[in-house]
Amino acid sequence: MERYRYRAYVLNKDNSIRQGIDLYCEDDASARLLAEQMVDGHAIELWRGDRKVTLLRPESKPFPVSGLSNETDPSASRAGRCG
Image (cartoon, rainbow, N blue to C red; front, side, top):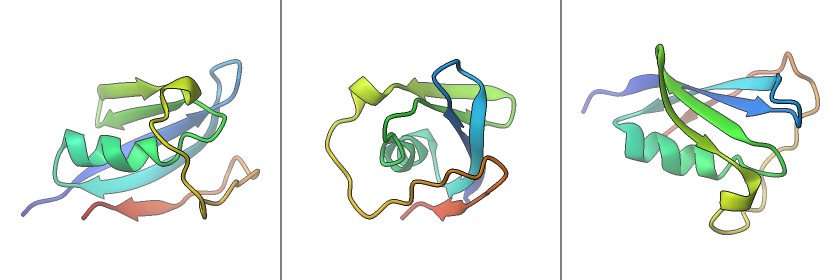
């Protein structure tokens, strides 16, 4: 199945972009599930091309996720894959 490039933006408290992360997923639902795991005190904006898929706020995080990196370098970039 084809995978599409999504971009998850980790936002600071003032809604400026802290970090951008590439995600490669089959659909919006898969990308959203992966992005939900990144919510750790910061909001996440998820985009596919020029289309905003969703905004995830820290209070909307469904469950705690351990083992994720808390990068502090705003220029750092990671890529994730769904499925």
